Length: 279
Length: 228
Image 1: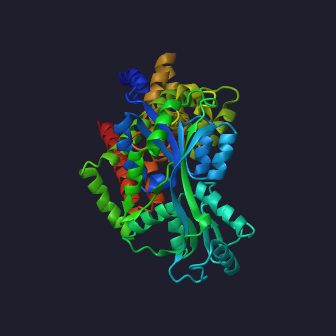
Image 2: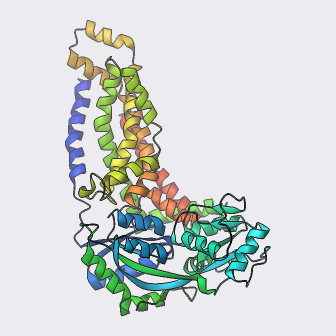
Image 3: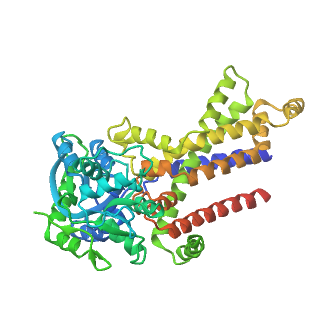
């Protein structure tokens, strides 16, 4: 009776399936803090480096999902995470004013830089940001934009405004990738174009290219290029499920002496990626 | 081109050095795809069988819908599942977001139409004489069902393998619902997406080869069992 055999197998499969579906294998013992953060803190390896120290100090397991600041804020608004580590101060202020977050605490900064091929065909090296963008636009040199509403993208858009230039959109030289920072740098390199990045990600990129990257720093040091990272706790008033106490502990720890020193010590190729500046 | 050769070497390195991150992603991939396959076969085979075996009004329309759902984009499924299981969504209280079962729900939605459509086709395309032969031999309704299912077993197995391939290789659902969280919801495909984003192309290729190797082992064992 072959058909019966196959039915028997199905009957055996059924309880197995139920066991698989109900198995609580993912239930963790330590309290879990869920964070949404930007690609730069993850791609540079900073979070992997801080995680064990944080867990040792507090006994809290830190998990994060790395995305653009825009989506990270949306995840906080939807109560899917407990805490945010982001870098778009104007959007952060609005987020707190709207009642979605609380206790914004500045943790560290680096700066944005404009990078491009060393030959620098458009000739922007050493110029101010406003001049550099105007030149890129006038010469229609390829400029790679994140185009993903991330903190870096928001910053770039604000720089076009500050430079009194119309925000490019459909121009053939303006490439919107919709991808993370390292991916966008790689695209810029492929197209011998310019792009704006945070310095931490650029150092990581240079490190990955064995210290000899095809794209060089052309514009830096302008005051408008500061890149501030802050921790924001998701407001328990908006999200009853938010683990506000854990989020607060994380915020305190990040601003505390131990983490601030660790951040300052985090180097690639002897260069600091982030400067601690918690008050 | 270097990436490909480097990737090949790195794939073996990752596997044989017991790289913890790689094995964590392999485990996540195997766990979610097992959940998704178990659920989609459990519901899909009976539904596909019914769709192929019985003649009922509206059958063609149902078939059309199932066939259309074969084209469901994975990022779209990811977005819909996210909307449902986000804390603000109707199923938010279950805490499924950023978990493997959450991903499995999305992948079940992905696999279900494949299992239903292909097993319905398998049952449909069986010898029309089978039914009359069985009935003339005095088979009851129950025996008729069992025999039909048994005769269609190879085609249904092929349906399961096709669905498995789709589930194992998707990235949209895993990324959006799972969040690519290291040690927890990072699957092989989201790890490939991440490494590619980071410009670590060789590592991305290595992970892709690891995924292919797993597919080879799965298909190999099925083909071995079939021979027996």
